[in-house]
Each structure stands twice: as C-alpha cells, then as structure tokens.
Image (cartoon, rainbow, N blue to C red; front, top):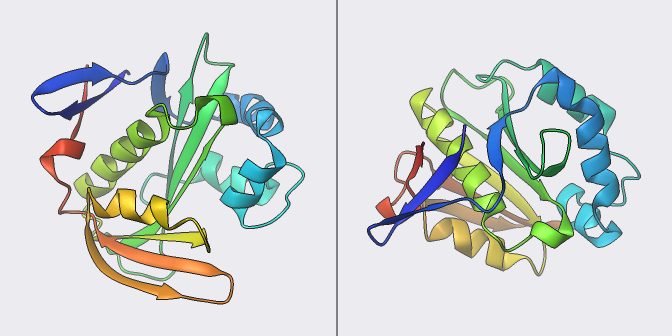
Length: 184
C-alpha cells in the first residue's frame, strides 16, 4: 500500500517506498529502526532514555487488533529497512470508538520529509473509520511545534501543561482537506 497525501489540488507520493500496517514479521526491523535513531530522537519520542524499543510496547503493537492498538510502518529499500513507525492506542477502559493516544518514531535522516505526516494520516483515517472521536498527544516542553502541526489538520479540543510536558487533545473527525490521505 502506498500512502498519498493530498493537498493544494495535487497528489504527492510519500517520500518512503511504502507505508503499510505493522506485521509480526517486522519485529527485528523495528529493533533496527530504534537502533538507527539518535538518543535525542528516542528521548523526545519516549519522553526518556530508553535503550531499546520497549518490548511491552512492541508486543502490544504486534498483537493488538486495530481497535485496541493500530500501528503502521514506513520503509525504504525493502520491508526490512524501516524508516518510521507510528501507533494509535485506544484509551484503556473507554467505550469503543471514543479516543486514543498517538505515537510516532521516525529515524533522524527521514525526519521532516513527510514520513510521519503520511503515517499519522493513515492511522487517523483508520481511527476515523472505526468511529474514534479524539486523539491525545503528549510531548516534552519545547516541542510545541508538533502540537501546532496537528492543530493545523485537526480541531483542538484542549491542551494542558504538566511538569513533564504538554498534552493536547484533538477531534479526529474534523481533519482538514489539506491533510486528507488516500491510497494508491
């Protein structure tokens, strides 16, 4: 599946070779993706200094049905060469379709090339199709730009500051046309 981002009346293929659902066979490639990320990228994504992709998190990504934990990967030069992974985890204890938390990890050399945007677009389209209403994003202080980027595509519901960072909630159903995602 190749994800295509639509905007300004044109369609542009995502810069990765492909974006597809995470599969159990991707476990080793996820570990290699993590190892290819700088310690700063890992700190910003996992809000701390993880030394390897958290095994419990990976197990949930690999085993979870999309309604519980949906995940996609971006790859370049073959399925075994991942450049990004993104997941959408449903809220624990919430009713079906109410909300969930978004997480994205893109290897340093592929950041700011549209890979994360394409993965997030696909996850949000899939979440919307399941009836998900809200998405929550947690970032460290100083990463307001990530929340602003989502705010340009989704309707903000609320934002809050904590000692550890910022949390924002957005309406999933209100994605703008400029951020629409289709498949080719």
